[in-house]
Length: 169
Image (cartoon, rainbow, N blue to C red; front, top):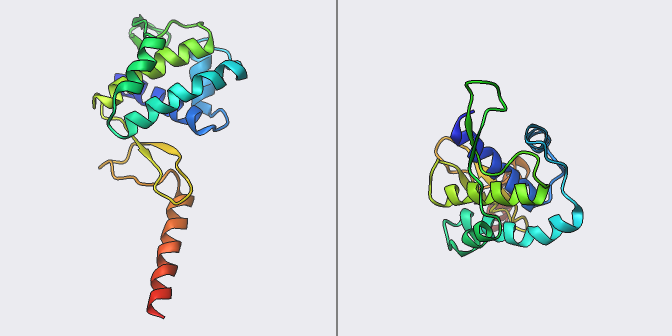
């Protein structure tokens, strides 16, 4: 596993949780690989405001306070793991088998700290469609993505087209 992939996947996981999306295949696979059970709803609900603030801060390239708060509440425990097989060692930010919220806190805090510092090149954006506000991980080649989905992009394009048509008569 490449380090940038690990940071990117943890960032996608943080964005998915903050957006309130149903568990994706990525989430199920990461939890399976790291021996993590789905988090208790009550604990996850309590954890969400801090994670949301950190994701928002990373999407804006600052302020760094929310990311540092998440790091203080869930300090990463850096370790080397080879769960992908011998010779495929890579860094983890939390031990396998830890309770879900602790694992998410440690892993997402460390990944968001890397994102905020620009290392590696993982970018978080916030959808610019009216009434959306969802976050997304921008993995486009030139990092110019502006919408969370094709639906939001199309809705915005159609609205702009209709507004122009209305102005011209």
